Image 1 (cartoon, rainbow, N blue to C red):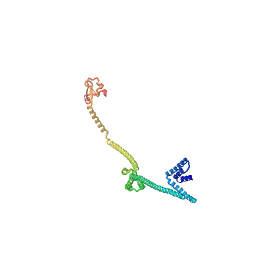
Image 2 (cartoon, helix red, strand yellow):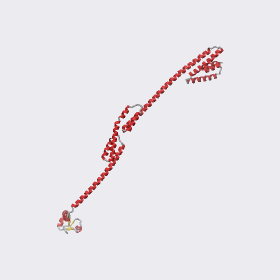
Image 3 (tube, rainbow, N blue to C red):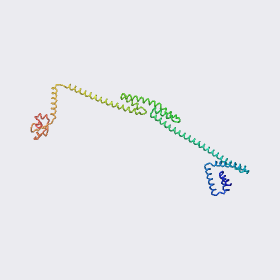
Image 4 (tube, rainbow, N blue to C red):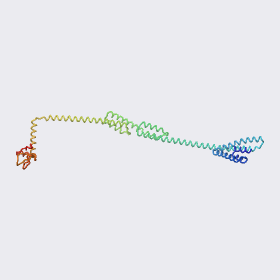
Length: 348
């Protein structure tokens, strides 16, 4: 009976069971120690996992129903009912303590869960807000870049793309919208200037006129934004006009040379006709001119004579005719002829 009592309390309420096991049972010491260690191990696990209150409730239920059975047994056996009543009260007390603790634990768990939920909601809210902020920042940067591109190109397509980029920003941005709207007038002016330039270039391409080309290039240079297509077309026009001007200049030069050649031929023919006079007059004039020239030459020319031998004059002082002369004088040719000197035979 004492062993059953110890077993009952070891199962129902371990601390009381330990008391009855060591006091009233005749189990071996090793058995008691093993049971004690196992029970302490189970209690330790229950406490560490937060299940101690559940064990109290279970113990209370076991004791409570055992008390009812024991009370019925006491009535049938007409024994004292006081132990059954005490056991009944003790079971209710354990269930109350365990239930209260479970309620407190549940409340704490709910509070912790609520706090955790609020914290998670706050984290999620912050995450969403941060994502939105990053999205706003990213799309704002894209919109700014799109507006800068419009400023550089003054293109309608780029303007529409910038409008779309501003609309994509999650939060309205009036500053960017106003900044973009200010570019509407420059875009219109640029479009008009581009059309005027295109027409001027087309006219220059058709006329191949230097004046039209200069007008077109002045309009192109005045554009606030360069246009590679216009530059390419203007370069081709300039090349064509320059080539045409070179060919024209060459033709004009050839025509001028031909005109000068014909004029020279006409002047030569006219001079030839004017110079056709009688042959006798020309011969007489030529003879007189020759005699006059010869007379002047005779006066100025110097000759060499041997005054003591012979009557010959020499143009060369080293002439062989003077090799035996004792003395040689130099006189003018006119004087030598007037004195009767003749030209040396060696020099004739």
